[in-house]
Image 1: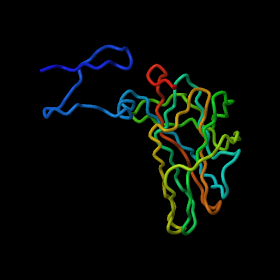
Image 2: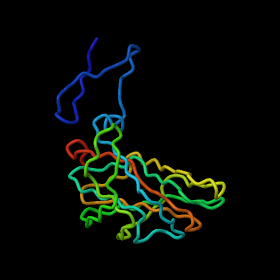
Image 3: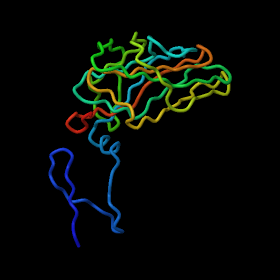
Length: 201
């Protein structure tokens, strides 16, 4: 019987692979690994603002800027529909701003670790920032509320690392609905990953 060794991504040491009693290789998805390492964070706006009724342009509901030397790997983008109308429909839109963006104001400093660490100062979250229109695109499923008296619909778009915000870049969030009466609190779940562990091409 042969033991199998694999090379570590960081450190490059050879370590033994693990298996179950039945012989299945034991693996962990990268999101769980990053969560265990303390890289996971969530941030959300504290006040709801009106949805747009046209495609977003140069004003974002929320902008999250990378003020670190790490890469922000976006796991999910979400919104809480605080106020609505009967049969109110809305969708989430995002815009990635390229490296070299000027840092916006830091309106929101409250954020939460996904394993209970104390909140630090990584990332600048700005509500209502004026931004360059670098291209907005809808993500995830659309949301709807049945009646005007039942606010609280939340919609989450699973990004799963398909959007990455490198140092000095940013991601902006917005929502489009059929009326501005539909208001949103927007936020995201991301991993702050050292470049040594997750470098971009």
